[in-house]
Amino acid sequence: MVKEFNTQTELSVRLEALWAVLSKDFITVVPKVLPHIVKDVQVIEGDGGVGTILIFNFFPDVSPSYQREEITEFDESSHEIGLQVIEGGYLSQGLSYYKTTFKLSAVEEDKTLVNVKISYDHESDIEEKVTPTKTSQSTLFYLRRLEKYLSNGSA
Image: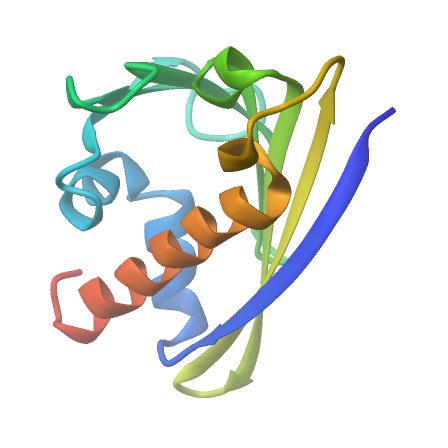
């Protein structure tokens, strides 16, 4: 049975800028903001919308060595994107289903609220490092790195 874990964070960046790096430019941005983890991101199929399949290749000291994801939700008007792991990554660590959905909302001109929903399932015991409380910390770390990237004028 699929379970959900929700968290949120407020970032000091404009919604439009954050949406661009989270939904369109992430292929080039992810390796820049996670330089010791992600070697590169490649589009395997699709045009960046729903159904697009991506592969995140990690550096040798990261295990597993890759994670294949599919964009399952993409709504430009509500600033919502969902990415489901379809191979490798968390699925190699005991989870049978893992999806992260980001929904952005403007709080002020230079502040954006990011609601993160993690949907997951597992058929057997899972390691502590893949529990939603742990994986959400990695997601929030990634969002903070995006905030720093945008604040430094790198975008």
